[in-house]
Image (tube, one colour):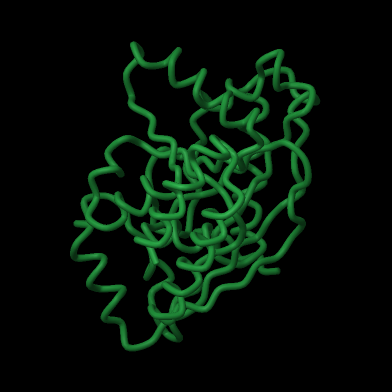
Length: 246
């Protein structure tokens, strides 16, 4: 399927440019199939965003790429290192991921490319924590990428939709079962997940989109998005130290 995706994109690119009427749906199909093969059940709740906007989500695992891509056509904004990951990197490149380098010399160019993609109505998805976690906490959101939403060209029309990615472990399993964090090796974590005799489920909980224009700066916008995503974990009874369920 990945080969088919790349072949179709060779035809799609010169005709449609940034607009991708076909290949995103191939990605959705591939990722849904991958989750079925793994045995991880997934469900989606909450409203689908309408109009121009981006999404932000908590980051738990390499599985997030398949889980979120299975929901609707979108494009990830990711650290440049992901491009070199076995298998995952190839998928990310083929599906139009925007890779960001932590280099101030690249900041202006990357900002321009990000704005160009947003103007093309790409649904860009960020992981503002900047790293993956154990799945039972949300780290403080980094505010830098939120600046792209505050420009004069985008501010009045842009929305940001917070998304909580909620992994429920197999029956009797550690609540951090799907987490990939700290010094965990990618290969070891991959084998652990693929060889598991049974799986739990994952929920993608979409929250109401936030109008960028209603916030004075990127920090206020990032803070509300962070609180909303964390609230999703709390209501699901997954947040560390929380007794709330819902």
